[in-house]
Length: 283
View 1 (cartoon, helix red, strand yellow):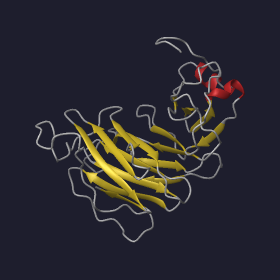
View 2: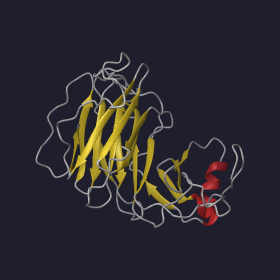
View 3: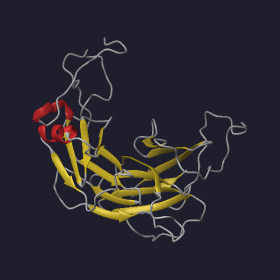
View 4: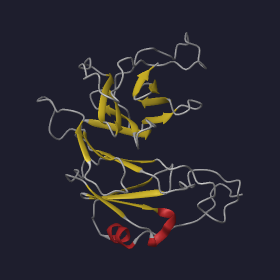
């Protein structure tokens, strides 16, 4: 089996991506989806997506953002694959017992793409394989007292959500004012709920299919002693640090229970969110 530090393989990138990477002083962002074999590169308004294990001959999917993000405040780009996992390794020379993020989906299932810029403007493709126009949604509003150069978003994260009606995902946004927002995105639209923050959330429209429930609360894991000094039942109310926001399905939850972890400068907040039917309810 491979040892720590061993090189297990390398992939060439498509020519169009290579040319962008080699341009001097060309601002771009790039990343790899750890739960699939997709890689991406954002240059200007163009988002390039490909399967990295296909190498230089990989088919590129090029998505166009409605507006170019600010180079000084790069947006968050999240890829949410919906295909089942592949039973065989992406690298043929790895041992059959190897398992990990290098395993790609077995089929070319739907791929949701979410881009959230620093101003709280969300752009979504529910299935990037179909070159349809994206859905846009404004998540945050800049107040007169907020400088135009100051970002509104500190972190954004998302995870696959099974609503039984096409691709969907659950996302969380940590704002620089300390507020925390939950989003449900699917065929029925984009629905938001403010979980915590300096100001109480406004009432959201009810009766919408897929709307978020109103009973959302911070959870204390049963494995900890509720009387322990390091636990508190109120959120920190501070923005997440860089890379400090994480949304994932809870182990053993059957895709119906999720955890939202928010790492701030002085605490790690844990929220438990449950998906029931067409809605998301806290517990």
